[in-house]
Amino acid sequence: MQEKKRRQFMRQAAGLGVLGLAAAGGIWAAKDFKRGENRLRPPGAVEEDRFLTMCIKCGQCLQVCPYDSIKLEDIDGKAGVGTAYIDPLARGCYLCEAFPCVLACPTGALDHESNVIEKVHMGMAIVVNESACLALEGKKVTKEMIGRIYDHTAVISESERVNRKVEIYDNDTEKVRLQKTLLQKLNTHEGKSCNLCADLCPFTPDPSKAIGMVDKSGGLFPEIRDACVGCGACVELCPTKVLQILPYATYADVYEKKKGTNHV
Ligand code: SF4
Ligand code: SF4
Ligand code: SF4
Image (cartoon, rainbow, N blue to C red):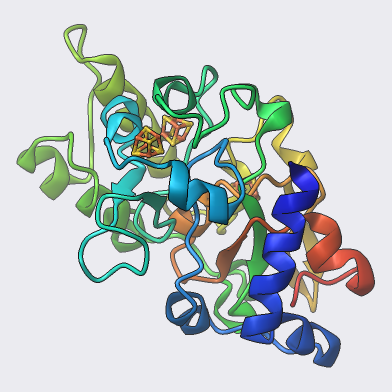
């Protein structure tokens, strides 16, 4: 299955000129991701062609996702209305331990064997806007930057959204508790140098195998590593849209020929 996913990515990449840009050392623009309709699918998704035939648009994955990560295509999408996808700029996947979305899928469009992190591979993180990285210039995370995530978190109250502060109560559901925990972690970054992508990467047990901050040009910069599964959490959390996900891509596809850089 992994090989088929890889071939799928290579076809998509060729169509988008991604590898040509890689050879030139250029940076792929985020707008090309949109134009290519190259959707990120929920964890465990089989290769794209099969996914499009197997997803019956039932929405069960969406209903069990505690982070509200999964969306269903509307009439503007290239795939049929109701097909499941993730828009990491709006909400990445947080790699729940038991992958409830995978287990809920009645057709195997999300492969039931992929319900452990070792078997999940959604894509690969890439840098699309290096110059915007706050860490590179030693800039701090502001309240407004954190507030962006509050603004698109639906499970909190209006006063919590306005105050950019949440408390966890005994009667909060698991879903609310998880999303509030994420917001509380975000708050601890306010006023500090930005390392949101690396610090909040949900890859377990060791996020540093997927991403880490390294010295670059007198500042720090995120380095994507081979354990990255393309969940898109870092894309959502980055305040300045430095990162993007190439769906179905592997580390070898993106970085093998350009060791030492995150660019494609
Ligand atoms: S792993 Fe969890 S956060 Fe990710 S899509 Fe599935 S249910 Fe949602
Ligand atoms: S549960 Fe499976 S079949 Fe239903 S919308 Fe999600 S991916 Fe498609
Ligand atoms: S670096 Fe971490 S947060 Fe970003 S896509 Fe990879 S696994 Fe997910």
